[in-house]
Image (cartoon, rainbow, N blue to C red; front, top):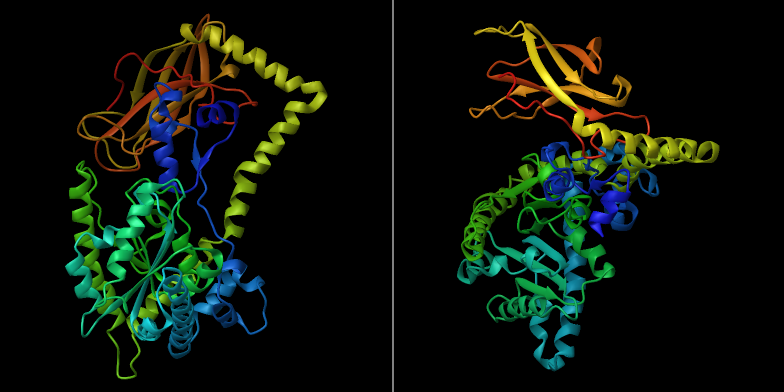
Length: 492
């Protein structure tokens, strides 16, 4: 289905910057000869519906009775972020209390459903504490989400939960597909640990995760945990919902977090990229997770002043609300889809359909001719003026390309210069592209193109030339998967 969609659709996108990059690599085979970066798959990062997920107590910080409009734009989040430390911290504690009340009720129902007697469940009244650092984790339970990564070293997790000075508490919710036996085993392992008498007041598993539960879980957590195997998370949105409620993210740099983590809105769990042994990778990343919680997350949460306020923590919450609030909104996402994809697609559709599909017929015939002539195209020679053993920053370099177009005309092609910094193996580092200008014809079917490039960076510099199809009916010059490169290395 993915291959069919990419063949039939004129535009395609991933749902985060990293997902777009991964997708270009995955499907590069459909555009043979192109670098993955040139594969015409863009990205628009997911967003979430703020009115659904933002707690009323957070929304009211933008102005009591102001409705949903302020949280759909940047100004509302600026107002929320400007709330005083005392009031913001009081609201977060109130939301923690609501989460705890819901958790105790759900936990009691769960134990009763498992056959426990009411008389056995008095301990549930002391489960969780509104003054303890609360970490949330909730989602579907496919293996790549790694529900049980936190259990890799149970003794170390137990020590974090029961730390006498800086304890943490975990609220975990999940749901596996009825046919997913692996997911069920992960949940069973977590439940067995959470049932242990010495930690059951500090770690809770809530079954049958649903939206009602989520609307209290996201606001009530101080930290949102996400530890997928990178880069298997396309976007992820749970951390966005938590951030809109003043939670800090503690996550693997995957999906949306890889794009918007800035060092002040949470923490990035180091990854063991390149380690092929899955158990060793999990061990390494779990160890990094424990270390972050102990030395950074808990240390910041419990670093309070004489007013018993964690000023540094509150500052990170305020920064999260101010900077992530406007970014993670579905209104921003929809705006991007409309402006970057839907409007251009609609315009293209109308142009193709006009006058009895005249343009569609023209493009179809043009593509047939383009493909038939393409094997005859060549980049015969590329040369440059202004290139010597030593070139100063800002020096203009004029690149000239001599190409053979067979029976095609310059209107049928785009001749591009590809240029930029190169590594020790003369491979481009983030290459740039610029259209070259047709200069003159030097023989039947032969054309000279020119372009002057400014040398904008120090260091090794390279350039080459390529020919691509060109027509107003194409969404991108790479669309047809055709290009012509020089048969020999050009400039470096």
